[in-house]
Length: 117
Image (cartoon, rainbow, N blue to C red; front, side, top):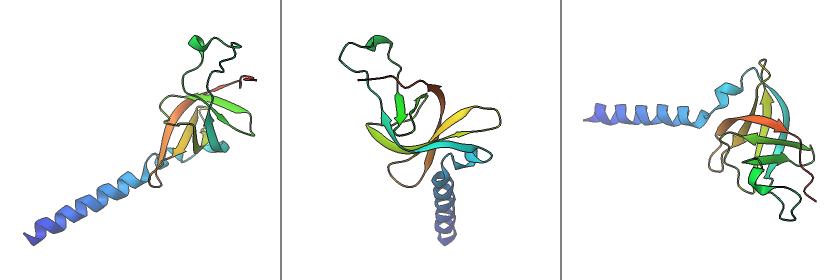
């Protein structure tokens, strides 16, 4: 019985350490191109844009004038993360998780930031 408990704790600790890395392994070999606080950019209601064609999940890094859409990033009004690019010129958004210190990544498409005012 004691060896079963020991094996259980070994498996749990290995899973926890693997889970704690998140997508950090996919960061190897990439160059960070922008980072910091990231904000969601919503379609303005002043009629300047057609909100039916507004990009889904449009995000912006304030002060850098960098906007992008992310495949699967879960950023509410504000989050923290950075954009990193590999040798293949594909850019990813690495986002810090709200609970813990994990990183999650999402493929992005860089866009021109709309003038919302």
